[in-house]
Length: 252
Ligand SMILES: C[S@@+](CC[C@H](N)C(=O)[O-])C[C@H]1O[C@@H](n2cnc3c(N)ncnc32)[C@H](O)[C@@H]1O
Image (cartoon, rainbow, N blue to C red; front, side, top):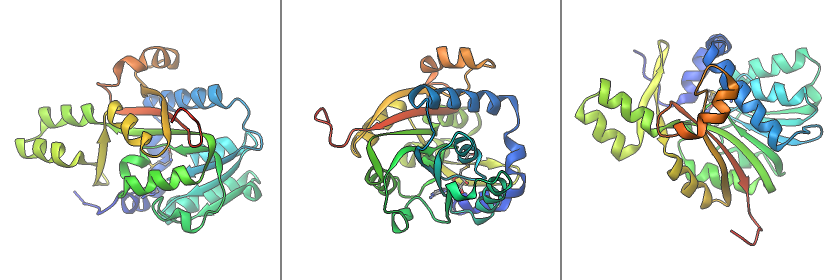
């Protein structure tokens, strides 16, 4: 199995097949759940300034652009970003999009504006190498009360994998680093996992408040996933988190 030193190298190598890997029922429910949550907090995206960090092949950028938003895509894997640009060009929305080929850690070198909405979807916060730096940059480039929608890998799912399939050495590595190798038949790379409690504390240090944390795609029907997802945050593979930037608010 090929080992990649970072996730963007892995994604760069699988860019051509990436979209086909997310067509199954799990991802259909997951995407619907995320879409409904975004529209619950931000019913009008028309004119909204959105940052899509770890934009990949542009699924969420494309979705937001079609609803009238202006989107900045940040993506270190050149081949992923190229596909995103081609898709957006095909629907004539290039002038509403900006493409930055960078990691989230370095994106502030290119960005000098603030955003109303941030997408960090597809577990990007599990993949960055310097989480503290990324959260600090995200806070800096968020407007007051900006919303962030993110998914991350769940610690309890990694723990179950290690108990069932791993060794005591794997268990100790997980406890020490909160990281495990993940991937597909195309290769593996290391990713970080989180508990819901840990997320709340981490983001608070960067002026974000966790307003909702739920398990992603808990059931085959999105209505059930939405209703019961919050009860399964200690069980399932991905956590879906909704954050609000509270900088400047008296209660923080
Ligand atoms: C699972 S994909 C998600 C793509 C897209 N957001 C989506 O939901 O379809 C994760 C993306 O994060 C990107 N990524 C990895 N490390 C990153 C970093 N340090 N900064 C920004 N993006 C990163 C990868 O290159 C990859 O395109």
